[in-house]
Amino acid sequence: MIGMNMLPRFVVPGAIFVLTVAFGFWLSRLGRPYNGLLFNVHKLIALAAVVFTSVQFVGILKSADPSAFSIALLALAVLCVVGLFVSGARMSADRLNYTLLRTIHRVALVVLVIALPATVFRLGGGP
Image 1 (tube, rainbow, N blue to C red):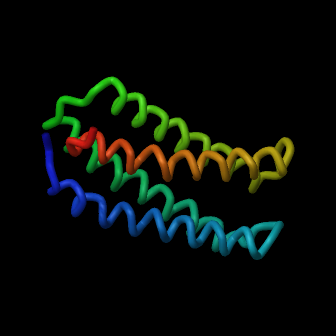
Image 2: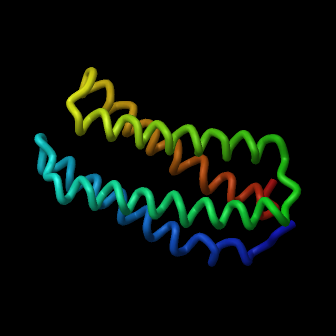
Image 3: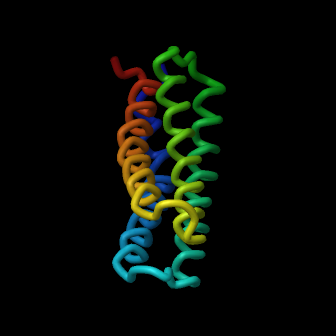
C-alpha cells in the first residue's frame, strides 16, 4: 500500500490539468477558426500535464503492486489522452466531422477525469 503520500504527488499535474481544461474552454468559446496562439498554449499545457502525470505514475508503479483493474484504468486513461490529442489535432485541421470530433474530445475528457483519480485511489490502497 502506498498510502496518503500520493495526493501531494498529483497537485502539480492536477493544477496543470485544470489549466489545460480552462484554456480548452476559452478556446472553445472563441470559436473557429481557432486562435493559433491560444491553441498552441492549450496543446503545450496539455503536453506538460501528460509528462508530469506520467512521471508520477512511473514512480508509483515502481513501488506498487497494481491490480489488473488498476492497470485497466490506467490503460483507459492513456487511451483517453491519445483520443484527446488526436481529436484536438483533427478539429484544428478541419478534418473529418467536426461535431463527431468535438463529441469524442468531450467524452474522452470526462472518462479521463473519472479514470485517473480512480487509478490513483486504487493504487493508493483504496478498495
